[in-house]
Length: 217
Image (cartoon, rainbow, N blue to C red):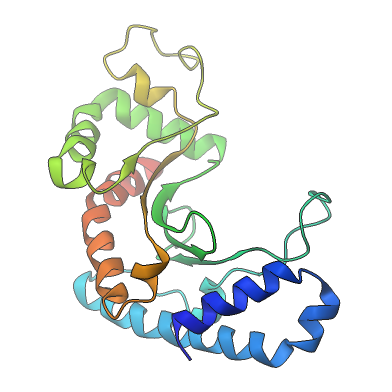
């Protein structure tokens, strides 16, 4: 089994997106799932070796469900066109995330759709030490690798309790604090993919460390 086979499975599923097709190809799905879980377990060991604070999420828990949530999004197809992998995400911490699929694959991380208390803590920290976060996200090696802090839902004005002319108002307006790096199917299917993921994790670590500390302050 390989990522090439995993992508091929997604292509076929996308063309035949129904429970009936999935039931007929359940063995293929289980083989694909087993491959991904095994790859995640191996990746966990390597990331734990480069970061003593890395939080190991077992592969079976890190791999997100392939079913779309039709209860709240009835317009979506039955199954997703990607595999989602959420790593290094202890309770109330930011996560390291892989989106491997047919369209828009990426490596990402941070805090998405924050609880109000955590968002308040992060904003308070940015108000006091936004220069540290600014230095992290503007560092050349970071800024050239990641798409930084895109948030379509950010506030149009200052959040309550902060001045409109605050030095870090653009950071304070955000509701999510995430970054991502786009990856191609060629990269995913290459022998170097694990190394690409590890390199991305290393580059993202200072960003996650700042936010994780801020979330608890």
